[in-house]
Image (cartoon, rainbow, N blue to C red):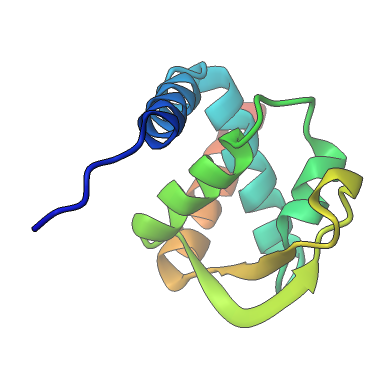
Length: 123
């Protein structure tokens, strides 16, 4: 027998669904900025966290950075190193953040982007 949700539980679930919709509705420009930051750090550092990305990104909607990072992980562009660091954001009270690195696929994409940019500057 399944347990019925209380009114408070139903409301919390509905609010969570609305937040996920807001994150999904963010502009492609914001997503592009996060991806650029990932490729920047990934080609210059062995590993990085959301702490590093927040330092170079403009203020984004709450949760959007994590959504893009998760999307890149799912696509195989980045991979978890197996290590974590504490968040430097005061509001998270030191929540643990994953350390990431570009995967082989991500390194190939970064190299293709770099080559295209060099060709565009030469033209």
